[in-house]
Image 1 (cartoon, rainbow, N blue to C red):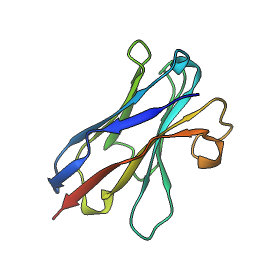
Image 2 (image 1 turned 180 degrees about the horizontal axis):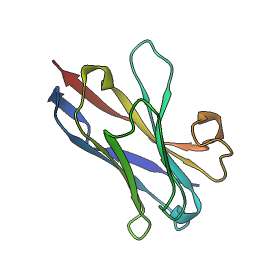
Image 3 (image 1 turned 180 degrees about the vertical axis):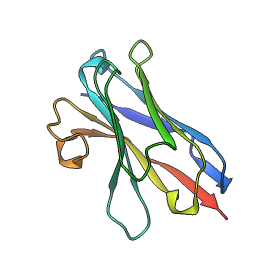
Image 4 (image 1 turned 90 degrees about the horizontal axis):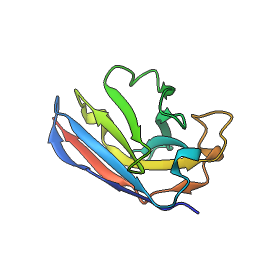
Length: 124
């Protein structure tokens, strides 16, 4: 069982930066693939970024690569999402998710544990 708690969301202007953090409970954090998803009002949840168990492998939504960076610290049981050059279309609730064995990192169906989400609002 893994519990995930996101933090770091907020309201900011276009072009700003924000760092989201997700704290995980449990002793087996390093055995999980960790990802960030987001869901905007009226839209389906979409994949943002994922990071492998050791932190060496990452995957990004093609539309976000270059602006967002995912990292993890297995010693602290945390995963972070650095978001730069934010745009109004980045406005969404951002969710942290953990998977014990996702075949497709960007497929939300492979993730067993989810946080409650943190709101990011980018105003123009």
